[in-house]
Length: 337
Ligand code: TXA
Ligand code: MG
Image 1 (cartoon, rainbow, N blue to C red):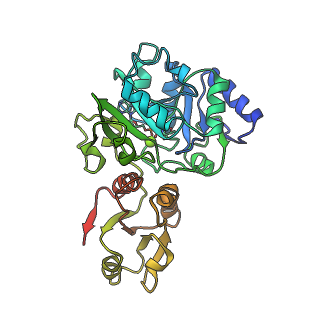
Image 2 (tube, rainbow, N blue to C red):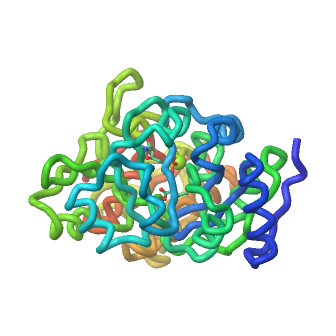
Image 3 (cartoon, rainbow, N blue to C red):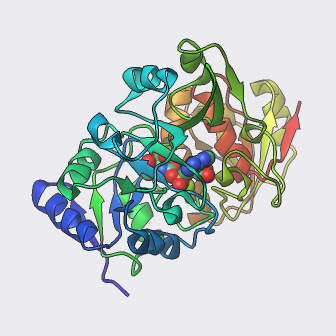
């Protein structure tokens, strides 16, 4: 058991967290997407502690975070031209690229795969922590496995208090959903997990973006998938969420006779006006929705929501990431109107 400290993201705390990482410990780290659970990616014993702290299945690989392109040397076998273009366009930032790994990345980190997901975050604290640690940092989202990803230090604290020595508190995450995860197939990109960097933006750098089936469809637990994370139940609050895919009018018509104890997840305050249920706003644009989604999912648990009807986000741009996360939170229940 640790006495988990919430530390301000200043130089002194970053140095303290870096010392912990160097000594094989696990710390809570802010990034621009969501908070991560950080350890030395090259130390299998440290990485094991990540899996234990969040109760993560052993076959789900971790993303390795770097703070400069130089750090890539020795971690991956080669970097194809298309990956270089993506790095140029979107690093530092919310993009993870799957590349062939070298033996320097332990199999514990890659969960036995011969590839590794690499990302260069843009958040200043994350970059300073990687730099001060002097090693690439493995970091999954810092939630207990199965809960919504954390976008505030207090979310991390609520999930992991007692399990890690400290969390660097850098306020709310700017993006709010996890990074876009991509793999390369020749000069095409396979989108494994949608994020803030959109399929539309990626398509400008290659000969086409293939949206992996797992992005919008349920994957069987025993299926062989390109990205193991897709098969796990995710982001799920205790409430039973149903996504209502249709116009605002259709949504209002659908909800008006439903249980008044249900909670509505709406874009805008006015969407829920005159309806019998309490409405929680999650934003009008894809960007706003991404930033708020996980906080709203956690709030649903806090208020003891049992039944939730959610307006379906627009599925273009960053909206696809919002839809992908909400779909999992809703256990793939969608009503098309
Ligand atoms: O924004 C993010 O990516 C955050 C922050 C902390 O950087 N991290 C994050 O990590 O979301 P995690 O572990 O919660 O999600 C990583 C996802 C999982 O779905 C995993 O299966 C996939 O990336 N992944 C990692 N390495 C992979 C690999 N070698 N091949 C295929 N998928 C991989
Ligand atoms: Mg995660």
